Length: 164
Image (cartoon, rainbow, N blue to C red; front, top):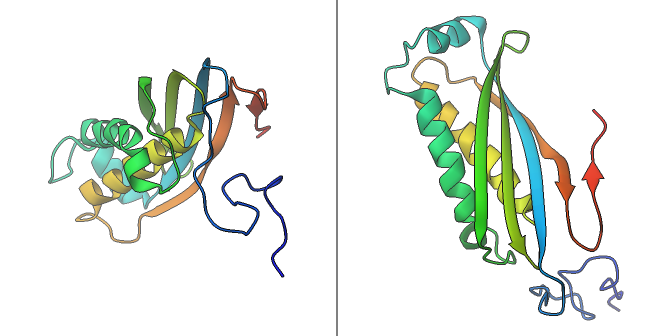
């Protein structure tokens, strides 16, 4: 017997089947989400990237652009995501000598009936994967880690801020 999870898991119907949530009755509001992640590597690789010695070219510009493009394609990648009119995508890649590696942060903003958390998480993920791709000739053991939602604003469920 299937349990009715529809009140807890909005992407499941009463029979437990996947469904796209009907957001047509929701108010259109300004919504923003910020996601973060890390790309960890050896100190030698970090130093070479910082010095601009990656053989594929502009590591950071390429990764930022990939993150922006990915945010706009999220509905094509995640089966139950709604296509959204995205008004802003910003991807920051910040060096972190303590990792060593890079902190990636994506901010996505829209005015819509549903939020942009998945778009922000997708932007960080693809920016991190692109950074890996651009630097893999230097090191194969680069690690992508700790991708998560940092905050979201707008919508019926209210604001969310992780306490790190």
